[in-house]
Image: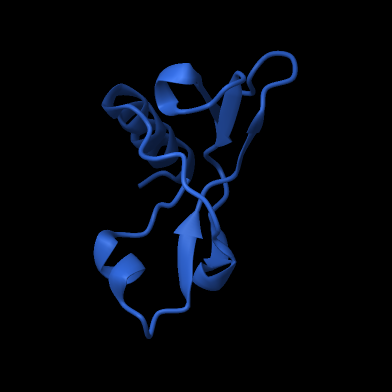
Length: 86
């Protein structure tokens, strides 16, 4: 999930964006994860790891599932704020 603002994403001189890792859910989500589902564009139950931001080269991004639901965006924002103490 891309976390950088649209300005950074659109700026050609910026080669990296901030992102959160998401992967297929196996077992129960950890308390640092938010569960995603079909409403968020995922075919399988998925979790978003909210305790670590990755720096991802924009040139390596290749496909988009689209934005996750507004409700899930709020859950992710809240979880990131809580964990990173922002």
